[in-house]
Length: 195
Image 1 (cartoon, rainbow, N blue to C red):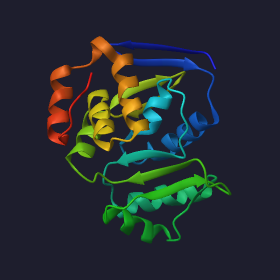
Image 2 (image 1 turned 30 degrees about the vertical axis):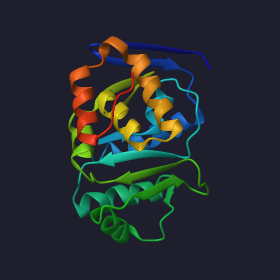
Image 3 (image 1 turned 120 degrees about the vertical axis):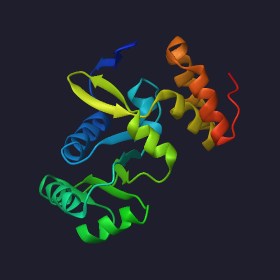
């Protein structure tokens, strides 16, 4: 799959043939984006930006919305070709979100890929939402976590795959990274940036 990526002060632009995962993410984005601000965090960010690796879930942090707004989102999902892997009804799903648990959304009849959706659990999630980055994927818009936070958080998670993700992002963004911001996130997460 050939890809063109442009990173500039004005944002990120990606042009490429969409994968099945990209199509799923865009469908979820179009659903969620009608009801809440969101940010995509974790593994899919590096996949979106060109790293070849697999993932079964895409992590969405959404702003805390009212029960009524969530009920509308939930009904739209269920009527629009999605289902939730959690056994709860829409009310129960909202309670899970309020209890800081994730809920999983899939296309009907599928298990993978799935979107894990959660309300902000901590200050890092809140900052990711507040400082989200706009990515133009062909003609669609996706919002992702700030790259400096993404790198520090991947180092904090610490698995081989996460460290490789962090290095990939560090290499890709080079001069566009704010090293002061990266070091501050690393300090708050109590990790060292090895590059």
